[in-house]
Image 1 (cartoon, rainbow, N blue to C red):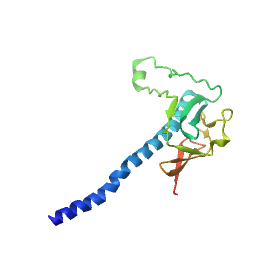
Image 2: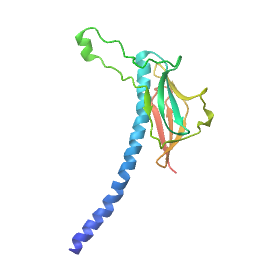
Image 3: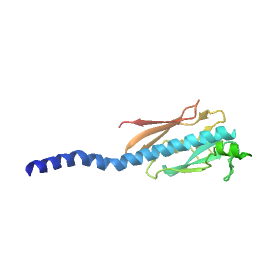
Length: 166
């Protein structure tokens, strides 16, 4: 009986720390996925439509917020835009339709750093071009006690998210 109790205690001590950390890791992975999705979908949409698009960060006092997609030139992207539909049935089967999401909400416990340089007249934004290129700042933020930096590759428009050890 003592041996069984020791084995159960050892298994409990090994498994419990992993179970406790799982929700935090899942929240971190979801946040990173949301950031990547916002950048990749906006980049793909800019290439598909042949229009410069911007991904603008709007926060609530430096915390949380959301990315908003807008046309870089006139900031009036149609909410119900959809690509032209194919005319015959064969083209319809092979055609892919891009999602037209214009808002990407972010977790409320993201703490953005260095946003004092931006204002309503000078928003924090990433711009994606039809040729696949992109421009934007290097944004530092903290989530669940871990520091990150978000930027975009200027040639491919892919998001670059770096994690910094404390």
